[in-house]
Length: 404
Figure: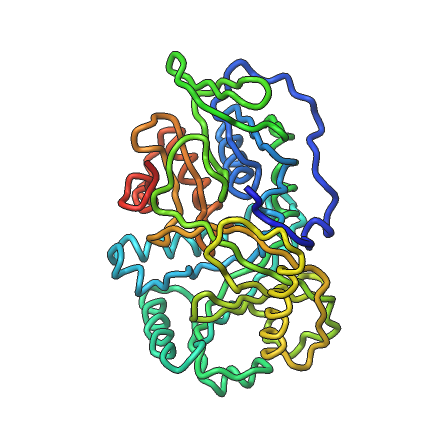
């Protein structure tokens, strides 16, 4: 699958990562993780810290899949608002899911700090503005809902927006304690850390099929076979070797990254920006003052091969961004398209397969993938080491739109 194409920005901010060691694989691993991106690296950390023997296999160079195209927005709000999720799955589970997302942003910061990771992690507020007049009431309802359950937020009237930003909108929901990160730096640092902890890293190894063998699993790959007590699929938007995603839709989105902007002082706290319409425009800044803007989603799974088509969309995104920030002298330094996954019920897929024992999944589908990777790694750790995790039921695979 062609998951991204074009000129990527994050790989220019860090050197390529390669393992330090040529490993002699174990006869039997406690867990083999398929995929070395955000979900795979965080799950490897959680399992290694729990004392398990772990290997990571990836058919590409490590960390070069969707991670390289991840825009690095960390928010506790989701593509589905809390008041809408309450209507869908009920108050208790919806509120708890939002709390898990809020806690996951904290956990990412704690991970960065305790492992001394240089990942350009910076706390930011988020502003979600009403794209048109009919969405103002929706935002007000969400503000009241988040307040009710103790999630930090505010509501900005039009005058408040005009005071803090160089653009005007009728109203906006502001959420606090969100963050931005350089996703590639983060994943590379995690992989370096888990390698030091004894996790075996195998790039350019593609898992082709999995068989049960005397209570263990045999993983047949493009190279040698591996044996494990459990397999964990953290394959992002790629098709998994085992299991069908009945509640998933793979689309593609476009992104441009600007030149460094000299002065961003009129951008309130350099807040993460998005809007109510779908598909939505989203904007953030980088540590070196660039602007990343994405959107123009299309219902097609593969990133286009045409650089010309990517640039056409990048210019449209540039124009939308210029409408918000007319005083910035922006040009397109990088432009790319990337695949992303959405689930029908707006929840990630996390847990053990309903019928295939010892097959686990962490697929963070939706606009909050990195946050889902963090909370999912904790859920999988608990499930695998036999600790009760009541939150696992919210994202279990056996739900209506899960994995079969």
